[in-house]
Image (cartoon, rainbow, N blue to C red):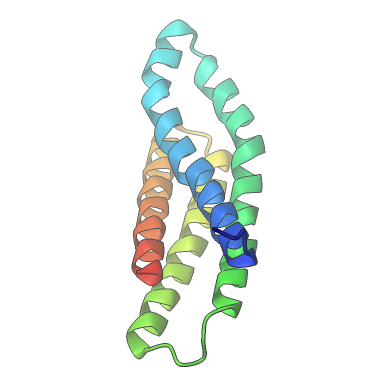
Length: 133
């Protein structure tokens, strides 16, 4: 019999947050050209709608990430600790660049910050998989 444990719930919530934060960004980026062709204001409206869900997902990632760290045994290796620090830096950068993306007033600024947000979100995802392995 398979039991539902708090560890399973914690991992599920963390993966759910990552799915929305990272997957949502990639999906929205793929839709922007079609939205722009449909109506010039459509990408902005879609981004604003996505932000309402994305920031909740980011908060969920931060909370469950802290929970994941708190549940780690004390005997982790230096390699684990180094990857964890790198992930924390990249997660902070992902949140910061996403915030700057929402505040950007030029297409170039939105492009640069959007690209950096995607890059840091994907890097955080990769580092998370390394930590889980």
